[in-house]
Amino acid sequence: MKRLTCILLTLCMAVSICCVSASAALFTDVPDSFWASKEIAWAVNKGVVNGTSATTFSPNDKTLRGQMTAILYRYAGEPAVSGASSFSDVKSSIYYANAASWAQKNNILISTVTGSNKFLGDTTISRAEFCAMVYNYAGYKSIDRKTASTAPFSDVKGLSSELLTAINWAYANGIVNGVDKTHFSPDSTLTRAQAVVMLYRYEAKFASGGVETNPSTEIPTKPDGTTVETTTKPDGSTTVAETKPDGSVSTVEKRADGTEIKTAQPVSGEITASVSVPKSVGSTRVDIPVSKPSGSMVAVIVHPDGTEEIVRGSVVTETGVALRAEGDVRLKIIDNAKRFNDMADHWAKDAVEFASSRELFNGVGNDAFGPDRSMTRGMVSTVLARLAGADTAGGETWYAKGTVWAVENGISDGTAPEQPVTREQLAAMLYRYAGSPAVSGELGFDDADSISAWARDAVRWCVDNGILNGVGGNRMTPQDLARRGQVAAMLMRFLQATV
Image 1 (cartoon, rainbow, N blue to C red):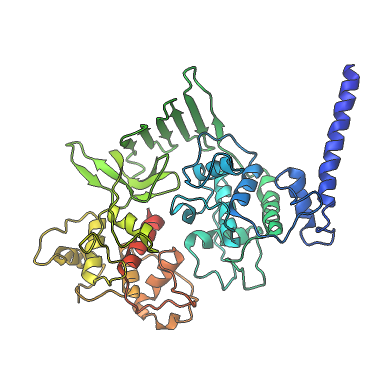
Image 2: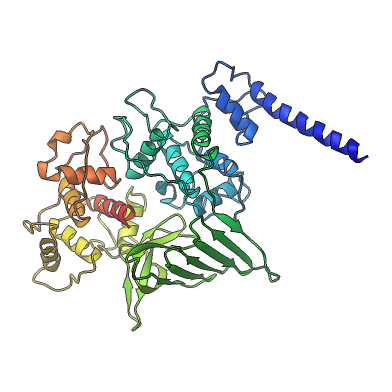
């Protein structure tokens, strides 16, 4: 009887393998001569992707964000997830719900996805965006992603640093090619065939060679229903998240460098955290987990004497609030939203919410923000002074102390503080505030020659880091005035790029 059972099991396994292989071969729209036939067969056999019907694969169909996140999740082996994502548009019954939760908690998604706390699973995904997801996945697998090479594509120069870094890495490692020798077509929608080819090449480069390592996760449940999720990274860092039946969560992160972050998230009330950073580490980025982060959330330092200080440089991430910390710090996370009656449908709504919640600058009166009004040089100096923690109250004029600070710190020459600031002037001030990092390369905008010589490096740096974008038609319009909404957006992107 046992022998018969073994024979039957062996036959079943053989039939199963044959059926999977045959299913790849039976796609009428993927003949052996199709450029991605081998990769499609690999993906189907691996169980990463299925056909669109019993006989078709639809290799040239466009892909959606939900689909590609689910495919990456399957490729990862569908690891256990604890709790749902914080996306307001992901229902627990949707097929990619677990994938979205996994991707959010492990920083697989690109930063722009959660700008409005929406996943947008039914929207198409671009070639550049999926490149970034694969790049982030490699980080999740603890792969060394350093690369000194630059992809030879002329149409990627205006992309954010997040996308550009991913494309350079993917090209250097043979995961992607251009549509021709000098063009990548980053905004083109990714096709199903292109997606599986990228995963196949990633597998050949990293997974098959044993380069990948994966954080190990254990999720036992206590008798009272409390779950304890322990994640251990290859470097020995651990994160322990304890979720009680009432929904409250306490998290302890212990890093290999000795940094420790303890967070308490009650069901209602303030989220609190204590951070301890060894002197040998100095200033380091810390991430405070938040179940449902929003753009107006900000970190607040609670000093030993009970006084509080908003951390204006804290930023909202997919999984919480990030900031730079040094030494021993007590924190709390608050929602410091400011409401303006002229921002409901404005493109800069999220950026204004971000900047105003950090009290970098306020409205113009009568509960209005005035997003399309110009902004003066003195106001920008004052905003940056506040961001640096300087006291800007008092002085002969409202901008006097901010302007003095800007001159003393090499941000501005202090001239014409009441004049409106231009886009290139704003870029230069942010660039100097960041320490004037080294830059290289040329700008690809049609009006690049109109950028003032003194502002070229600054604009290049801002573009490379996704802080400053063009205005359409491949133009930069560097001498145009920077509007208040634009300044808020650039400040938000600046902090996101530099925290």
